Image (tube, rainbow, N blue to C red; front, side, top):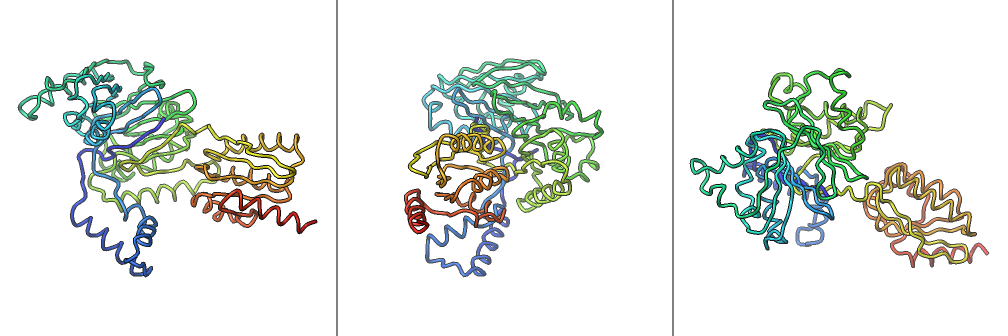
Length: 439
């Protein structure tokens, strides 16, 4: 299940201005001067740019709401803001450009910022493509069609040559498409918006954009916490500050800090701040992100969710959420070579520990080489599992560490517990040399 963000703004598109772009360029050049970057060296420039803060080297994006979910069985699209135009252009490079594409589209509601990209969705103009449009509001079909009337758009709905089927569903009804089970829940928003919970039997994410949480007492938030409960990802309306959500009561939007509380109570793993205020520039949005992290850090009684900022082109792959694997590449004499793959989090730690204990029981292994090249994430549970395994061996070598995995070990102050090598072969040579010296 691959989630991708195509539009993340609320209310109206908010492209970068020339002044904002110039500001990013100036900040980058000043930083390059401080670090004395050799601007005649392309590799040095590339490395420098990669190290810049996201707010400087890129942008959150200016398109309005559109999120896609791809699975091996198909494609699901949520909302049709201006981000849908970019999604459509990308789809045209594949089967949809040949009239062989098929997808499901779910609407949360029909405010402008969630529908005005639909007339620019190129795959809908291609004969042979098929789209099933799901919605709870009874007026969705009429609104989608009428926004393409001649009074305000040059191409009428009749110009769409793809097969389009509108299908109304009930709140809470489970729709099974593309290997997913999807159900909706009403949110407090002018005209009502619907959140969608999406599950594939292993992972779950919730899109809960355009919602106001007026009362935060336990009895009032329980229905939402139950709906969000245990989700791997919660995409949350963070358009306002808490102050603004009070001043602009009944506008139907929430804040990142309220999302942090709800996500923590619901046991959500990742909170994604979404539906950004069009008046907020990139720096303001990243300051909200930092404030949310600081707020969550005040409570040490529970494990806080990871917090991300929704940015255009951000991808979140949930296919490996519970798919950590340990492969035994080779066991020779007292050396075992293991290949680790996926997210080495709390679940991955259990998988690793079970595999490691089984290996100890059936071999005389005292030295171990772990190939970490395909590890995508390392949590403190994973670090702890590595340290426990290290205690049970004479020596342990880690190879092929991605930069971000290496950095986690540095932050945990545990890097010196392991021998680090680029390749498995080099690690084996070093271990053999050390073994010969020992004898």
